[in-house]
Image: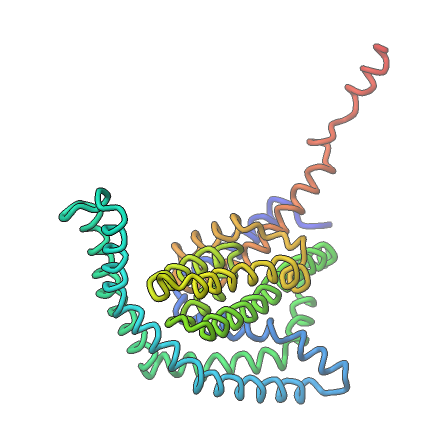
Length: 360
């Protein structure tokens, strides 16, 4: 006889509570393992494809590892130094940018920004705050990455964990499958497939979209001569993970910088705007339909809510698990709604239909 529903809910509730407590107390420790697991999950289809071409799992993992190391070294040598330098320069020139913006408004709208007005003072203080806080943030980040512990976590533990998980991924899934409750194994497998389909469509698809768009924005903006094109492309590419946000923030940042740098050169300003317009056309009509699909099941508002809630509660580790948990909760919610619509609570006993038929 199957375990009563009340007892099942009790056990699953305890498991969920243990998971949340572990995130709360062990968040910093779990970060490299979650990153390693995410990398392994992202690369598992590549390993499966190599296996179907005749490679063993070990050989497929070795090939992927070699390519990943070469890519990382190339990016570290060519991209990261330029990205750091441009970010530092952008932070240093922020006050001057705001000053130029204030002067621009003063020349064209003198009544709007009188000397000593609240708006003028606020704009000047914003630039100084960005320089002060941005410099502190950059300095803290650089010193943090330079520390021995973080270097070990990021550059040793994460690759090692990802390689081992990628090597044993299929065996781990089979082991988990053997531990499923026998009465509910078919339903859990179906739900897991739906969650995997949602995650694979969104995470792998949007990850690829972010990489392509970020590279396109960075290269195109640098080619038209925008000073901080690499930083803008990086920001726009990362934020593309949240639909529409990357284009809005990246486009506003790029066009704003172009107005300061190319004021009067409307061709260059138009090229910057055109780069983001073309990027949105490519994303909406080619990249997202092909790589992500039209029915992912993760609404942008739901995704932003999940990132905000889990990020606030559990910090960076919460943001790492927000997307998988959002996908899982969405699938479970749709399953619950489907079960409800098939239940007597929703459909009723049908007596009212018979009563209406008798009255007729």
